[in-house]
Length: 203
Length: 405
Image (cartoon, one colour):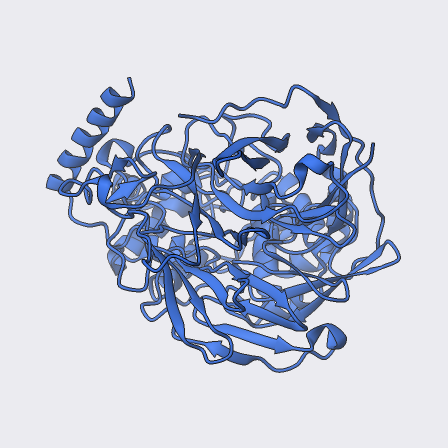
């Protein structure tokens, strides 16, 4: 019943030609972490040194999956996600600049924050992440993958605010999955989850 | 062996239905999982919305039959999905998860990408006909007359039909759009979840007459069709369909369907009761028989996610390719061992029976990896010179397939 995954017998390797064209949306360059580091200087004012935010309301970018960072920058630029600080920052960025920034922040090692989970929330938080399918997309250790962010060791107030926004359908959500996932959560669940996730090791 | 698996799955689902209430809040793609699957790590893949440069992709892995060449034609088109060709050669490109329609203008081999329409609502479906670009958003179909001469200052949208998403459905809200030989616009309204009872408009292929906005049903029991084409000889409609998920790696098949526009009766292809023409749904199909439903023309592979289908009408490819169909396979995510991520060639024998063989392969590099592929074909477009473009939403790239002896 499955379709056989074989190459055609008479297949030949392709000649792959490139056309170098000037595109306003993206240049032809591969994602460049060094170029991203240059552009990231301005990010440090809010996101901290090398994307290691020290502000509970501002997310840690260090060591986040590159595709996630680029996707969120895209969502800000396109107006799908709105924020008084981030929207103007993203407005001027090209796709290539976003990919460069994403490559840079993904390459930085996250520094654990000083946050400590309340003892009574450790087991309860872990249980909630299993019950609500968090681990299936964000990964078994909640370190994120592909377009999905690392939650482990993220800033507490940021986690709390995003979960509340997803719950009321006010947080841009590319495919609707997080809005759906947040619906069964009550206020107490959200508090426990944010407290639990913020205290996990980011690596 | 197949029977045993089917019985086992059936038993698992029967138990699930007895124990668990409907998962109203689960994301649409998770709906229909059984308890054993509740910790599955299978998940749909998201595109790189900012695109990836062709320079960082393993293009040398692509394979095609002898004489064919695949090259990158344009890049940097966010989530490049459906393709439409303007009278003057403009290639229009849609997306599903964002809000714009792009135009690629070829200026002597130098290609420029412009954002021509902004602020739309999941504008996945686009088709160009007689100077007009039609766009299917999640809730309506609009037209942009004379757009190709005014790409920098496009005309205002005129509504063809609206209220196509009255329930604001969470799943399968994106629409494909094709122009029929009868001058009517053909499109899908998908099922609102993985395996759920559709309402009277959902899980269908419909058409609308752009002259008066009147809707008609073309086919029912179609879970989600995101690819449609008309046979240039017979004028018949062919469309692809995605079958349900979470019935295991090897069931059910996604399908290719054939509908004669001369037929008076509206065919029902079985969803949610019957899949692939011969497999009862463990939940919805218990009290139904597949015999009451029209069968698909071809089984395409399980969870292989067929999207664009196009007849080859150009002169560049060898004569035996004339009138063949090509199908872009976007999946599979709902399999532990992945397949697809390729372009298949479908030929019709003397009796009109379709057969399938690989055409472009190589995007799938590790069938057990996450992600298993580096590119995902979406839609196809035969160009005036007989070459064929196809889109890759994962990277935001258009490729060109050409042939020379």
